[in-house]
Image (tube, rainbow, N blue to C red; front, side):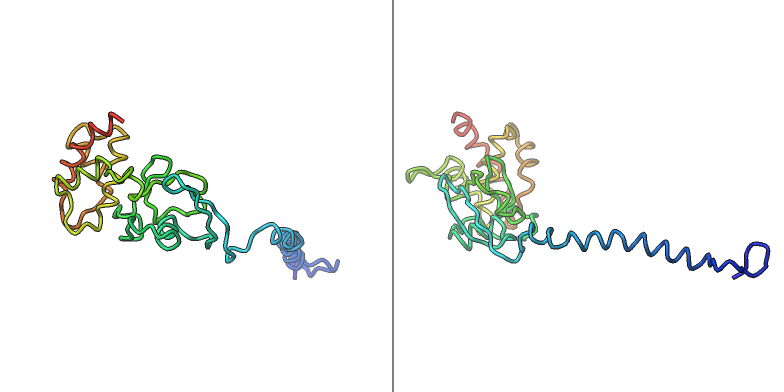
Length: 206
């Protein structure tokens, strides 16, 4: 290699080798440090393939479960607790058939991990009725014929209860807007709006 004047280097210093060595040291140092810390990190991180223990509060009862860490609330309800009222529709959080209430807020349970809902109050369609009496929203859906095939109905009812509790049942337009996350392939939308309007006053009275 020649220096900037074009004459051969006689000092034994090679700029290209020096730059390569410097770059290598910069990369190697963090890698070495990371490798040294690896055993500690691995010891502190639980193997994601191992089952985890969770306790779900469902319809007022505590349900201890041992499940895969990736289990959704929907699958925990259906596959582990036998509560099949919440339906698996699109499994992408787009149809609303799986809607449940968590701490009073409507949630698409197919996208919510069970471990994230631990110790929070989960209400499903099975938990709405009381002492054999239907919830006002359930009764309104029957009286207004607000379903056809019925597959989306549990999610529609849960979302409708939340819609009222959120204060969004004051007009047909509000109801349509705040129920728009729940799809009815049978297109029973006018009857759903009527059911929400019918049940709203009774729910608001407590």
